[in-house]
Picture 1 (cartoon, one colour):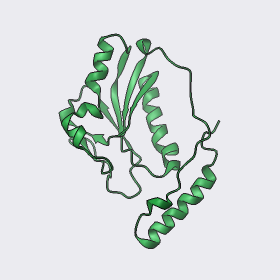
Picture 2 (spheres, one colour):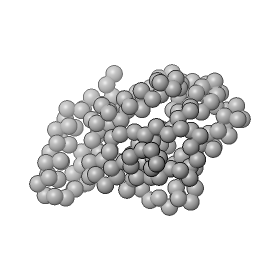
Picture 3 (spheres, rainbow, N blue to C red):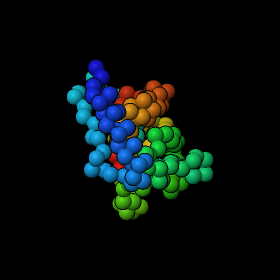
Picture 4 (tube, one colour):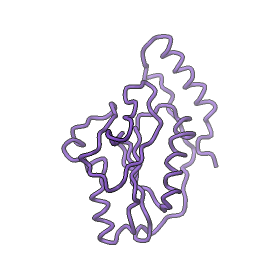
Length: 172
């Protein structure tokens, strides 16, 4: 089932929104066409104690020594992802995302990258294991079509490669 059954209509409204933005040189968020989904994609549940879990965060985290920053200032967003080894100290992360206040994350990086908390749950047997990588993306992505066609398939490909049974999504 295609949960985004109104995609054609939404795309036409989105394209008109983009055309207006180009014509005026400014973004009118009051005219942004909100996507409506008629169904929620779902799959059978898993027993977390037996599952491998992938941490997915929309915080825009990346490793500045080896990865390009997200294009945080692009008015239409950045739809790419970054794969980060789970063992990377949070002090080595940088964040490229201009669409949330960074105060809480700066005070406690676990707010948006709860690696230690998930490892504690793994050690307690609540989670079978935490996947060896974290997936990060920049949550500001106004083009729903690109999210469906680019971002989600990239995250799913990582999940499949790591053979995880569940994902823990942390929105920014």
